Length: 330
Image (cartoon, rainbow, N blue to C red; front, side):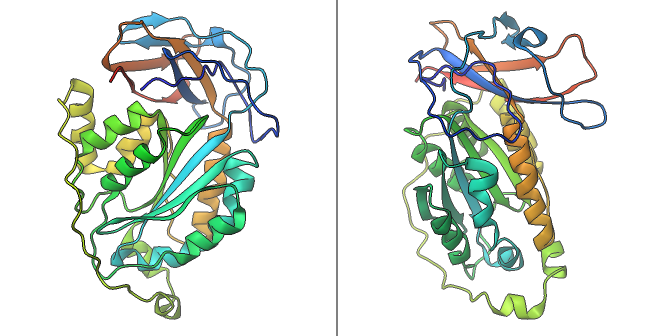
């Protein structure tokens, strides 16, 4: 889905402005967050719109050159945390990250929400700019007795909840790399992310590794909740799988986290210890605020899914992370 606000080329590294941006109603403008690193993995600074080449289904598009008046767009961040019983050791390790979200990621003008997922999806905290509320929400997440973890169902709900959010939309998954029991299919979740222009970042863990690095007394502090009633509405009809969705679905069966982050232009930061997850949040903040934001105008009659390719022609050795596709029309 194409964003209704025109974001043109922006570059900011770790700077969160307190001013309010000016939005322009241009319904056929597509925004593409892009991360650029050199062959050593170092972030590349100082590029301009002219340095990039962007292809839309193989056709070159002019990258927007209007001045974005007031800096960084506000961020809406949804934090989706796996809360299955197998996640008990990991939940103990993430309890302190709530206080890190505003200073490192959303800033004073942004907002974050917290959702947990196990055999059902639970909205722990709706979007808020209150750091205390976010910290309490993270601490309140407790594991269920079962080991279902409906990651894709959670993604679909997040996409629906973000429909009316303005500015940049980001989803942070704190979970294992695979889904456990969702009704929503991978293609449906991926299409929902494309329609709402949501970029996925992740900090994933191995349930075995986090248990190995946990103290027995830590695990005793997390008491299992009873298994909930899992009855719920049926998922939406399966979309007609195009070539991109089918390709991503095949990859997603092996590693859903890796596929979701790479397809939307995000990054994944694994952890196994409490200090490790805190470093992951720090790295996430740097990654989000060091992206170039490209924009281009799609054809008025564009519909369905379209493949995006971004390069820096003068520097083929650069590594580019950008969304792979966008969805136009209803």
